[in-house]
Image (cartoon, rainbow, N blue to C red):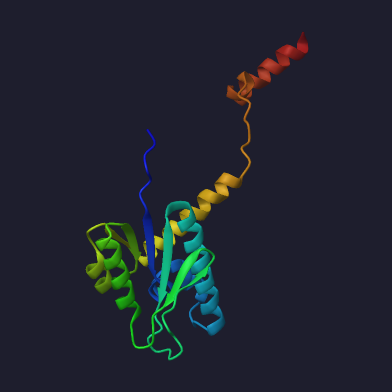
Length: 180
């Protein structure tokens, strides 16, 4: 009997993870220059795409665009990840809570990645789980470590009697063999 796999969704509080997740703070550096912050944001999008591809049905990253008058809130797809900048005047927190509520109402399983206690409290339960920004950073490190280990060639080790002997016994046996 083939069991139908349940749909799982990943919902990420973008700027919270960039500021709170150790992996992304290290990329952005202490000064958070525009260029460094963009590198961290690109790394987050790449990480979410890779992680979601292996573990989830779909992934969304929500960034706060409340202070950006050009932000319309229209989602776009980058590397298979849905990217949403909240519309002007609306916080990313509100958008995340709304999306999580929609998943809950549709009885879909979702993990919300944030270290914001308010979002965690508002979204947790009814099929919605949570993961901290640092927890996600650790998941990414393990994800890439596992991927790297999968790429390493397996070295076959030939298990011989000689390999199991201590060096002095092996030397005595070699001397005995050579004397014959």
